[in-house]
Image (cartoon, rainbow, N blue to C red; front, side, top):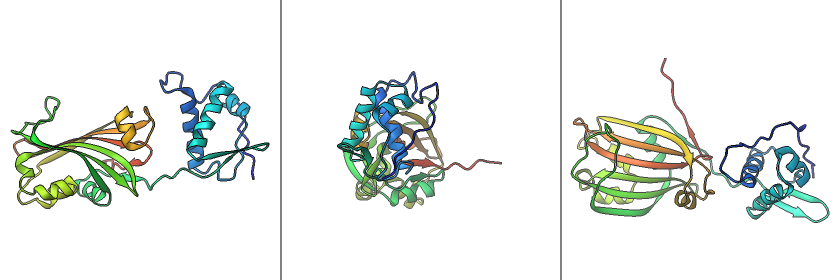
Length: 253
């Protein structure tokens, strides 16, 4: 087995001073990333607790807590009288690539699976910012958990105009909404679509569903489809795992 040698110590810690996330979780995140990137491949003997504490400028107890967490996750294995070795890389699915056209977005959702968490047909109404669009009379609310390779990558809370939903209720209940909307181009005309994205932290509910820790980085997307009268046909708030999603944006020249 190879012994991993730390780079020369620097005066400053790689951890963020103003980060509300506990220090041991920050250390664990950095070590986990090294393992998943194969910087520390399976079989590697990781640095001692003293060396990790020195690198990250934390207490030895903090380094121990980080290593214990990764041991419980199955990424590390302690060996008496020898040290702690890397067991394997994390079980990370292929990255979900998010593009910026409706067709590519629909194709992405078609290629993944989903589980319905909540369905409410009783006159739900989204809370939207001023200038988003005109609200219709009532909406169907759906909350779904989306998976890739059996792993959850997104939680979607969406509102679909009831008049649109009733044209294909079985399809909207059982299939991804955006691909179904595009299949209804003759009867449902999306005149304008836009979305905004912000980087945030996972709250307890989304962390539980996405199988990440509370406070882990997530991408929060608000997506809106409007008809020719600026009426909102579809409104969604989406939370994506930050470590499994990659956005591709083509720059205009």
